[in-house]
Image (cartoon, rainbow over all chains, first blue to last red; front, side, top):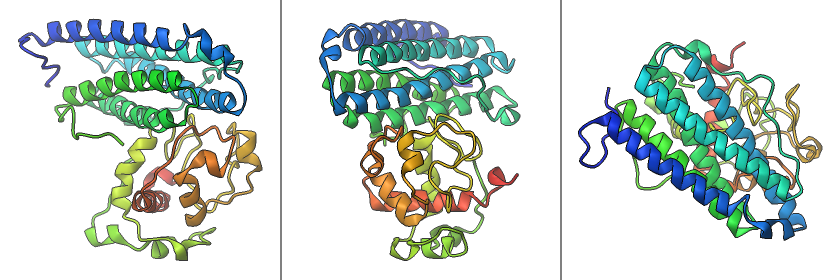
Length: 192
Length: 138
């Protein structure tokens, strides 16, 4: 199975650790500054705010489901150790996204959606590590498309920028999962 | 989510034909032909929130053609969706997918829409074909 091939690193595991360390820090710092730490959001009002809250809640719902999906993958017993670490790391990113989205919704005066009591995933189709990775890759690609479809909707440009920041993170997840599956990590120049 | 389409020529069925026998197909005559295979790839964009057979962040899509909007039992729709009185057919799906938040202000589907009409036609063709796939059989 191919995995991360980054720069001059010859040890995939070391390269993965280096990449994850950098990307995790980048997202967290940027997103916190853009969303929860931005008091100007609280001054936003009216229809635009209501619409932004709805869009954020849609994103939050998907993030919460992604967290649950990665939990299913992590507990499946199908993931070998390096990949398991990767899945848990990605799940951690989604938790950060969800936490930030919920805080931002609250800052805007909205009510954040909660995680469902139960999610239904196609577990009967997950027989191998590759099945789990493919399932996760599909969710990540969908997440990229969902954020891409959300960015133009925000009345507040800071929210759009923050959504784009999350989009970037999830695109990296998708690319790495594809690479782990032996597929071209970045199959095209544009996302849709 | 994969379903067999063994005859390539079948993938370019005019949408009118694809939906002619389905309930709620009013408006099909105005649609452009859709390619279900291309629509399957476009459907991947929906995967963060939707699947064919399960309710997720968004409702399931099995049976969507001919279904009244906001009517999947047990799914927590927005009030706007429940009040929309839309029935999903080629015409209404095409309008909604172009700009969901304009067609149903207040919808929880925070998505800008698909501006390319051929992509919308392909996606709708996929949804109609998928409804006859194993994933949508009880």
